[in-house]
Image (cartoon, rainbow, N blue to C red; front, side, top):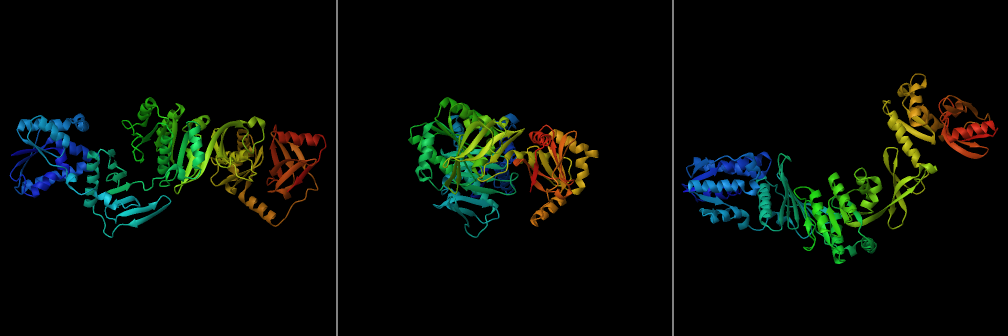
Length: 612
């Protein structure tokens, strides 16, 4: 009897298993060239099903060599387009046509293939997939009540992670190492079950990486060439927590209810972000709003009444287009990671949809950092006005983002006013960070209690260091001494290159940065610090020599003052703080307020006082 096989019955090994048991002895087993082409294409893409199928054909060849069966290959080889369209049934149709031409019996493990073949009047033998006659999935045997994840790898002892978020322990399950054959069998079970189970989804299968959502389990399978061996990681939630059980629950409820908001739930992997997202989703639905989710893969454990959407044809932008027609009140986006995700999140939020995004971050402020550069700075508070940071399954911080126009903290000039995003502690209402532009940079400036350093000086120091590193071979360190002057510390060998012939290079740098720069070596800095540690101070009895050069007002204090950081006052009123150069001088760019004040003081015979 002639029996034509399709890919399903070869891949799952059912036909070779039956031949080994004595079935089909003496029959002609026909493998269509279309099946060979499909398996070859899968193997070339790194899919394990392709490699499994090729091994099974090898087993059929061995059976034929022993005289148990007759093995033939026949039929037309499909085009590349037909192979790519295998999921739409092109290959299966070619196999059915071949059965009709040969007047042969079709052998398959594919439910749909068997039903269509019978409708067309073909003799059909349906071999139930091995998974349908087996016990429950072996991967589930590793999951006790408090096991969150299972980690299997060929050549290693199985591991499980037990406990709850924030209190996890990694344990060995048994003492025997898993074999490649065992891992392959478990992986095949998972994929087959996902294809049959209405609660199963094959989220991704390419290049040696397969991701399956099966009930409450998300299973990632890695194989060569994607990984150096076969590995299975299965994860499921172990906690079902209501929003009421979290700290700040009432305040968050009130915030969610006030209006549709943009919220980022931030935390490190395993911190409990998804569990909180589920709790928020259920609270919102109980409050009478329409909630949907966007997930790839779909692994949030939410009620059936909350529809879970994945990427439409692999693109979340397509999913967003559909959801804007559905018009949910809130959408849970799990997870917002790539630039495309942030763009989709922003687009939906600006369209008026309440958005809650799950974001990987090690601090609450880091979630905001991930928006910078992907969303226009002034639009950030409209896209996300709340950040909830989760750690060890608890809400650690809640940050509120507000947009204002002001002079950033530490700056005093009125013309420095600019748009600023204030990052505010939700509990204390204290401003923790300010976000604004400085030149071409976007700055996230922490406001620490008791901090006295001018933030603008910090930025200027970074700018000077960045500029000088283009010339310096060694380390550089800049210290602002006033709004218009800076001391630059470098290695001795770099001084000539930075100064240039006749000071031409440093003059050029000063003009470009708008600063007066005093270049000193690290050795001079250490000597000055040693003098301060010993309590040595120079005398100011001789006063200050003031002279004007082409581009600077120069204060000559004498060589004893070299390396000192001093306060300059005019008639007892503080003017600025500066560091004395190695020549005993402080240079201040002409045209600055400080330079003008010094010139006015000299012309009006006011006293310049130096204090260390």
